[in-house]
Length: 148
Ligand code: HEC
Image 1 (cartoon, rainbow, N blue to C red):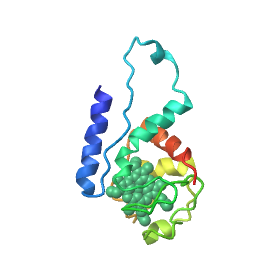
Image 2: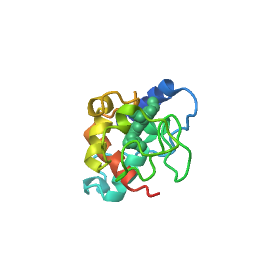
Image 3: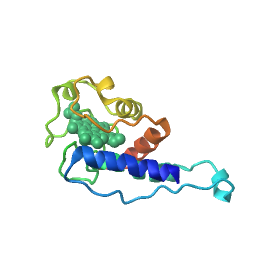
């Protein structure tokens, strides 16, 4: 239960930070109780993607992920894994991100999400850092599952 509360709290913070254009989180994280049979099994890849989709709620206030959907406060992240940083024509990127020379491998995404302005000084992504490594891993797995 604490996990779900933490997520809701982060979601509420993101909502407060972003103001409008907010979609409520649609997924729930299933937290298994100790002693439940399934809890002993290692998380399968699909569980990771599902957890990442839920954790992405804090990003969804600014980022669309549906193929072809217009960018919002942040650029559309559909197909971002393998994409050059700052590549979408419909989004006004910071010069810092455009000139970063980065390609979004899973490792680069992890580093950026951990600390956006540490990875790309001068980036206009002012919120959305995720300090929890497991949560970042899930979010990156979710992003990798999205194809254009
Ligand atoms: C408050 C709004 C906001 C939130 C919340 C946010 N972002 Fe961003 N994001 C941005 C903006 C604005 C940019 C463009 C940054 C720039 O141009 O320097 C960006 C850029 C990015 C990029 C680079 C995309 C590209 O096309 O090069 C990635 C990847 C990214 N964000 C991932 C995330 C993830 C994952 C989360 C959630 C953990 C998140 N962001 C949360 C606003 C946000």
